[in-house]
Amino acid sequence: MKKISDFDRSTLGIIGLFLVIILFFSVNIIAAFTLKSYRLDLTQAKLYSLSEGSLRAIEKIKEPITIRFYLSGKLAKVSQTHATYAVRVIELIEQYVSASDGKIRLEVIDPEPFSKKEDEALAYGLKGIPVGNSSEYVYIGMTLSNSSDRRRTIALLDPSRERFLEYDITKYLTDLTRAKRPTIGIISTLPIDGRGDPQQIYPKYHPRWAVMKVVRDIFNVRFISRQTLDIPSDIDVLMLVNPKRFNEETLYAIDQYIMRGGNMLILLDPFSEIEASLGETPYSIQPDIDRLLTGWGISFDPSKFVADLNLARTISHTEEDKTFQTKFLPWLAVNDNYLSPEDPVTNTIPVVNLAYAGSFNVTKKEDDLTITPLIFSSKESQLVKTLRGLAPDPAVLLRGFKSGDKNRVLGLRIKGTPHSIFDRAPERNILKQRTEAHLEKAQSPVNIILIADSDFLADKFWTTKSNIMGVEQLYPFAGNADLIINALDNLSGITSLIDLRSKAEWRRPFTLIENIALNAGRQYREQEATLFLELQEKQAKLKKLTQQSSDSKDTLSHEDKTEIQMLQERIITLRSALRTVQNILSRDILALQSAVILLNVILVPVLLVIVALFIAWRRRVRRIQSK
Image: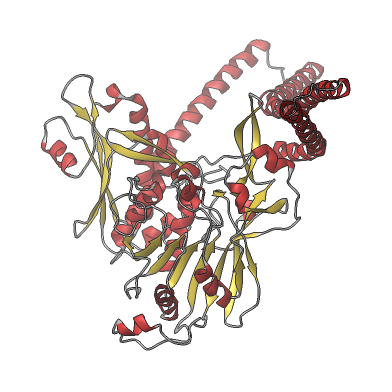
């Protein structure tokens, strides 16, 4: 057989390249039309697939639901970002349509300026984006409606909230398929619903917390007085937020609500940072609630909060006119390693931010109750007196930290049939003309979730907000609201949203860096603490000598002057040594971060290129040798 000439080889190579290109485009075109309903999502978090919660919500649809996507044809001329996002929105909705077996229908509508379609969009609450200085608007929003014309609206689709889009759509689908919304009864000493609620204890104006906007989107909410004599029977879940100062009659009403089979979400707090900022007593004064906990075999120490070296959030701190990054031990970023993977309330949440959280202990095991921990601290944790919370110094907390080498329980679930903590009804409850007899034991199994923090509901711990075209948008950076919604969903018996995977861009930490930084921190912390204690000692001694000299009419002796000078010099040396230790720690962590980034961004691609070049060189050598 004759050898193929170099010219023939080149010709065949070019023909082969063209065939590969044609084959590539052919496969993609055919796949686009014939495999539209098939997807392969290789991302770790399955970012491009419908979550199990969404698929479950679709299965529960009994009547047709129409999604009207209002998309202006001129949108690309005003905002290319929004126009690109619109394509991805349609692709996501088409996944819902494909999975619904005809129960979900998509209509794409172009609301042209001054048309009936624009009037319709405005009537449904959509918000337009102005076109320059003209009176025209373009739209990108949607409505979801069922056969009885119940309607939910997303007024303006914001590309920066793309990661929350599936949650929003599934949330409204779930709401439209429910016969009725569950009713949440709330007793709160914090102004979570803002000004205007008659049950709030703060007279000044306070805006509604973002978490209540999320809760009200899904549930009916009813605030209940802290002096109530009865919990209404139509309350599906009773939620207590930072409960304290209950009278005997209200405590009895709560007790009997549980005895009737009522489920509860209780948020306790040893030290409420939010309450302190409002000028109220931030400490937990709750011997009444303690009676309930004791009856369930649980103790909660209201005089101590949990400090955690592993889970502490990093903040900017200024000391000696220097600003540096440091861990703030009372603020915890509890990641999924410390959230129960077995419980549906916590197993889909990547991180929850807590502040001055307390801890629970099981004091005795009740035969009729099962207690399951949901949220933990790390073993690098310590209980700190709540008095330290009034003016906490991050550096002082770090220097005084001593690990208890113990995981502490920050949240738990109680299931079973508890006994009443009362022998009989208080006098005022009897005079209330109650028709129900006193119940000594729960008539059916109850479900109670306890979390040792209430501050985590506040906006600053889990979300930022912005107002775009009059529409308030939330941008969560932690799963605090998800934790509340999951708990209320679970306790109310509605679980459509509980497995809905959050596609938020939660912080994905450099675990290696954090572990090495933690070990490095331990290495320098003892040295830092020793220097700090000596510094305090020298400063106190200097202050004493200076005070003596100012109080005495006599001039200082030569020895005293010499000692003061030596103390001042030593203090300067100690401060310099402290700064050096802190700078070394910061420098080492920064160097480690740079090394890891360099490894991922530069070194790995370079190695791949070297390997590819080596393979190409080997093939060329073999080809030459074969000739």
